[in-house]
Image 1 (cartoon, one colour):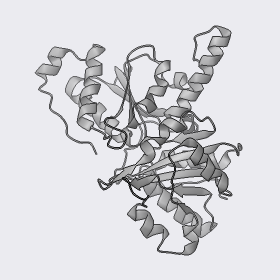
Image 2 (image 1 turned 30 degrees about the horizontal axis):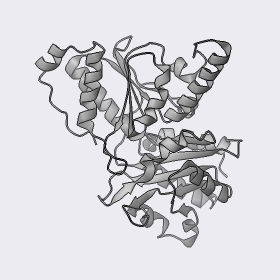
Image 3 (image 1 turned 90 degrees about the vertical axis):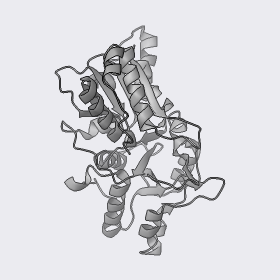
Length: 335
């Protein structure tokens, strides 16, 4: 088993799934037994589960040995995830990969999983935005001593490359659930955006769009795991009740967010995923995510942008007259 994973600089900002291919290929050559279980929670609507084409080309073309590391995931609950983990020997993390673009008849069950995983404290779920975060989570999984807990990583597959963060990133902050990605142009930001996984790149573009149009300066925080942030808040909240206090000073989110400004939390999953951290904010918080039904939910960039602007209007950072006079037009899709 490798002691640590180290990506090249060119791969740090690529998508987790793209980086995963390189990691697995390298580990196959070095040790022949990658300590990660690769699964797919992608299925055809009312039909059998299917593997993304890219997986088929990579895992099935070389050798039968590589096939043993691929599991056709047929789960949509935390208990089923743990069941697969317990059946697997020498596995430190489960990596769930689904393609970014899918046929209409193919839907992803990963919209359901995050809500269930959030309530099972033996599962450590992460939704990395790029290879850098993916690397940090896998290195944590390799060093993890608690064999009863399972690291679950959602690896999205896209050709988009995220820009480099404004400040150096500590792996500890990634594992704890959040870190500063884009600092404000001002000494003190007017507002902030929290974003996880595939929503990070749209968040950066939404922040830039609103800054250029209305002069509202944002700081953007990447949140690889809203659930890990929420669990620490819940633990501190319980301690406060017992000790009759109302302070979150020892939590990671408190160390990160020094100022109380209007906050928008984004996710490509259901908005309830990022709603988990709402109890930390006393005012000016909104959680935005996918809209629509469980199977047909979509990420609507234009609607999310407008809802962000509406939240800023409610918090008096943009006036109604400025919005009308700006002649704001939809920036189109950010995907």
